[in-house]
Amino acid sequence: MKHHLTINLPRLLGRLEALAEVGAIPGGGVCRLALTDEDKAGRDMVSGWMRAFGLKITVDAIGNVIGLRPGRKEGPPVMTGSHIDTVRTGGRYDGNLGVLAGLEAIETIADAGLTTRRPLAVAFFTNEEGARFAPDMMGSFVFQGGLPLEEALATTGIDGTTVAENLRRIGYAGEAPCGRSVHSFVELHVEQGPVLETEGMTIGAVESVQGISWVELTISGTSNHAGTTPLRLRHDAGFAAGAIIHFLRDLAREMGGNQVATVGAVEFGPNLINVIPGHAKLTVDLRNTDEAQLQRAEERLFAFLDQLASSEGVTIEHRRLARFEPVLFAPEMVARVERIAGDLGHAVRRMPSGAGHDAQMLARICPAGMIFVPSVGGLSHNVKEYTAPADIEAGANVLLRMLLELAE
Ligand code: HGY
Ligand code: MN
Ligand code: MN
Image (cartoon, rainbow, N blue to C red; front, side, top):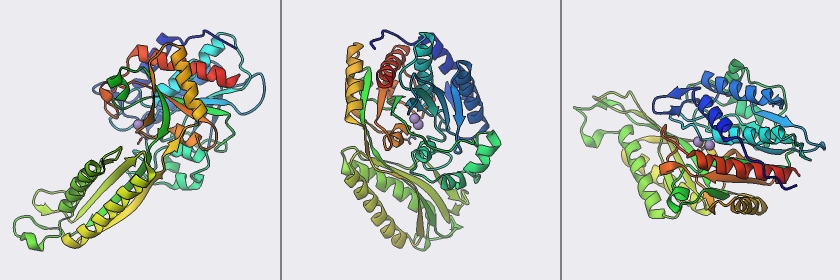
């Protein structure tokens, strides 16, 4: 069934704008950390749009929300979606674009009075960012059966409260069981990197998601007087934290390839100008498209930690927060994105994803694919994140065609 349907761009841009008002922060960004009141308000708004044009909504036990439009036949739906939770300095497109463009595509199909052979579904998954509760992609990880529900619910976040109590508090501890059969999954997402813009491309046909390794390190040394303690007597947890940060930059540079390393969160105790830190806690985010290289980076880090602990006379404990191997998307889905983008006259290239996405979890239970659109300046997880309306329209129309093809 060949269609020349196109999405209603003003409607999509209007919803992106309205949703960006929820948890808005200075500079045009958004702060809707998972399961906060702002996340609840965003969930209520998007569920309201789903309900308004008749989607059948289910909320599962980890708070994933799925809007379903029946097809001519019963059976596993063709699904799209992403996330609407954000990091603390989030942009208005990361995740939100995939959910609202998915909604827009299905509403365009409904407006045209079409009923696809297969059911269509659009979802937003709980806690994709993992910034408040690790791991990231938590909701889709539970949905696909990789993370036990009870374990996810018991997870304590960076503020000491659990997923379960927050889900209940915001009213999204759903009744529906987590997980269902899905025919195929397609996610539209901003690239969050510089490649498409640099190469003048409009669409990315995403082939893979790189591996992710998250670890929390707790360093215990000895608090002491900053003025009276000679260097040779110091067990300085703060110095050790700094040494780790420096080591990781050198390690990534030396390994080259796609290796990246980030220490995003650091805290010192007692965190006072005239006290040698006796305590430090920091997070390590290592990523690589190549699993063997990622393991190599982890080995190198832990060898360094052992050597640092003995030379500085501190103890260093680690807690695993997330570990995902690289994921390859179904070749036929990648080829489909590439073909449709070309048919619509867009410059398209195949590429890996540096960021984690819900699609990498769905890829474990059905053929999954992703469509990238350019991020201006390659910026993301930054209030200045921006994607031009023409690129949003291009990506959403590729998504619309994907859904129509897959659902027939
Ligand atoms: O961390 C990530 O890659 C994603 O933003 N959750
Ligand atoms: Mn995202
Ligand atoms: Mn993100």
